[in-house]
Amino acid sequence: MKAAICYEVGKPLVVEDGVTVDAPGKGEVKVKVAVTAVCHSDLHFISGEIKWDLPGLAGHETAGHIEEIGEGVTNLKPGDPVVVGTVTSGCGHCYYCTIGARHFCVERDAFMKPKHQNKKGQRLALMAGPVGGFAEYTTVPAALVTKIPKDMPLDRACLLACGVTSGFGAVVNRAKVRAMSSVVVIGTGGVGLNSIQGAVFSGAYPVIAVDVLDSKLETARKFGATHTINARKVKDPVKAVAEMTQGRGADYVFVTVGKVEAIRQGFLMSGVMGMTVIVGLAQGDLRDFTPFDFIFTEKVLTASGGGSIRSSVDIPFLVSLYQSGKLKLDELISGHYPLARINEAIDSLKKGEALRNIITFE
Ligand SMILES: [Zn+2]
Ligand SMILES: [Zn+2]
Image (cartoon, rainbow, N blue to C red):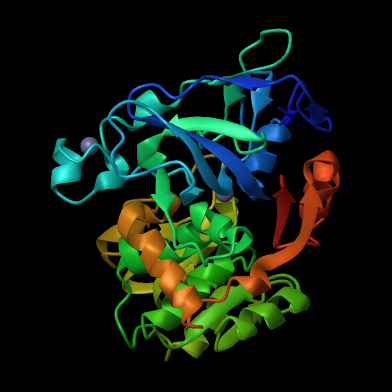
């Protein structure tokens, strides 16, 4: 099979034939990949911003069909259309699974086993999302796979593996935004737009989008933002949020930009007892915070990993929202690229031209 392999960070991926993948073992499935979306998290690894072993295989927003099932897999069969994501649906019986926090299942770390090798026999390391989606086939734990209806287009479905669920889930699952509360979303890319959709779905008002490009803020309005702030154009974005929230600051702030400065700014935009949720992968220290930031305000600073989703429940739910016209997915797709042109898809995302580019395999 073919796969796009990272041999050197900061360099184009090498599309190579002769790659193999292990047959599915106990509790695993082999998936014939149909589509994989390119996400900013892939870029963090491919560019070397986040360290990983090389050669490596990225790609973690995948949809396709079950090719083969391993021993003990009872909920899936060959031919089933599936989403392969980064958040486990859990073993079902550990402490975290039992209390309903399946994304913290104790077995999740056991998932990072490289399954692919190149024609030289080198094992290909996996990025944090152990999907291996930039290959024609992948073998993964069945707990990372969610069956979807046959009439759900796979290029839309793959967005539910990470981007959509990270943004939407942070609002609905992690923060549990209340109706009639105020929400700020910093960053209106492929994840932020879905936090906006989650806020609208939760009945928030106002839903304030913050970004530095007017064109992106226009898109944010199409996704349901009621107010927008161009952080480069207004003098003080924190004051601008205060003015839009009766002087109080926002009840919830979602920081989808991977920058620590944005986390600090988001925190300052939150009001008394407000909650700031880190959604984007940010590298660095939060050294600007002091206990006084919290003591006199009871503000909360927390994070959401992968949207804190219960994948076996939330992914089918989001599919039904899409099919009933209540969730925008079509508008998130900027282009389709065959695997041979994957580096073009990556460059266009890097340049900020694209929300999501889809790599196609069949
Ligand atoms: Zn992603
Ligand atoms: Zn578990």
